[in-house]
Length: 272
Image 1 (spheres, one colour):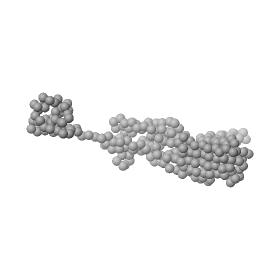
Image 2 (image 1 turned 120 degrees about the vertical axis):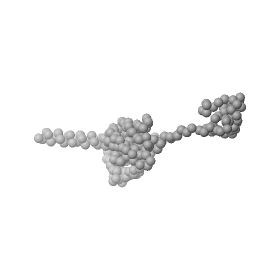
Image 3 (image 1 turned 180 degrees about the horizontal axis):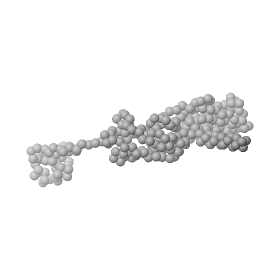
Image 4 (image 1 turned 45 degrees about the vertical axis):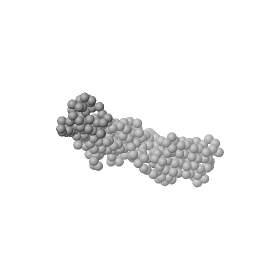
């Protein structure tokens, strides 16, 4: 029984370690000289880390969600700042924003040596492609985040109202799925909006890439032009053809007899 108890305890800690590993990702920055100033900025310039041995700051804008910040000094002592307790992430449709300054003296630390920023792993569903074949639309959805996105529904809208929904299976990070959406020909000429996770059931990194608008197809009614009366044909000042009726962007037109037109002009392939 004692061995079984130990086994259960070991399994418990293994599971905790596994879920913790998948719940957050970390980035560590080390100050190699106490007189230096460490500075880091990503390519998008929406995440910055700056600190020296006495103080520092972390800043994000429309970026990942910071879950905690661990600050370690040169004597091996550390202090962890936590989201919603020591700082706050502000969510928008494009991501998360936060700002936190820290001082070694206020944290009970000696000279700051290392800063570790932990980010919450989150899915991020994105509609990457829309292909149309007649009344069928093929919507490609990709998980561009770093956590699995659970199953959800793709909502379709047109004329300002909800039309239908289609199931989207769970997607691991980097994976994609193409969903077939069949829409009545009645909506052919109207714009369509496709919205993945339209009920907002998934805690994603951002929601701004969940929608894609597809323009409607213009329907042109075919009509038979009326021929001019009087047995005459139409010529234009700059054209080389004679016409049975006016069409297109014809300008500076004149009406002449067919016999005259045949001497100096060729027949229009649209009219004849």
